[in-house]
Image (cartoon, rainbow, N blue to C red; front, side, top):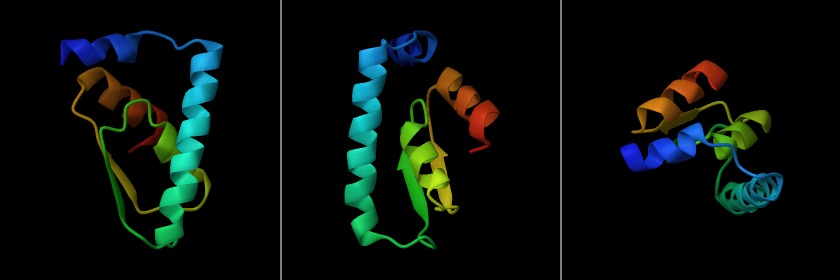
Length: 82
């Protein structure tokens, strides 16, 4: 997974972070039309965990992630306990 190590180790620009956040918020708004807070959610390839964070901050507690990249997975585990 060396290619994705680049994304795990580098820091996004302010504009890039804003664009990613707004994109994930749109995804959240679309997805939640079809779910309720008791739904079980599995995100595959959670990356930095932005979408997971949005879901958990909005009361979706049955949220699990799978992240194949070792660095990103360790960051997610340390950050949010996913």
